[in-house]
Length: 245
Image (cartoon, rainbow, N blue to C red; front, top):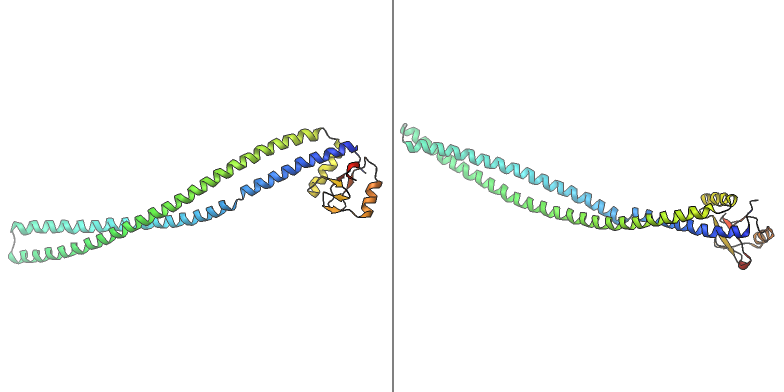
């Protein structure tokens, strides 16, 4: 059975306190890293960005359609201008001039139709641009919320990291002054059980929170003061003191 002086065993409680604080800080860090607000905002941002991409594509397609409509109107306008110049010159046979007048009338009708198409596309483009701007605003709002929460979490994580470093340094310095054999038993127990040491307080193991059976208590009381004894339920080292009987 491993042994250590009672006064030395009492130091395990302080070491366990430091380890408990490190564990709490680790849990706090994991909680911050997995904050559900970030997950929810990331999901919302993915959806919003997808809708923004679709809105941008719709605007792009409408802009291309508008350019084609403008080009069609311009092309017809150029033909009308040329035909009117020929008609106004008065050169050519009368039947040709009559045919030219009919062509101009047809072209004017064609230009009117194309201008209607151009106007319809322009109106649709205005709506699509407004929709894109509204969707961009949604994305900006989500990103703003994301940035605010991220900054809040980063600040909290920095505080946790600073305290972890401080406690870890204190733990290292404190452990260096402990009985090496006892420390080895403690470290092994901590790794296996999650708790390295706890008080045996008025017959109750603070490692398990359970009252020990009369048989287990009798066995522990029979052990020498420098024997390292263990909780039969949690498996951690039980630190004894005459004050806690």
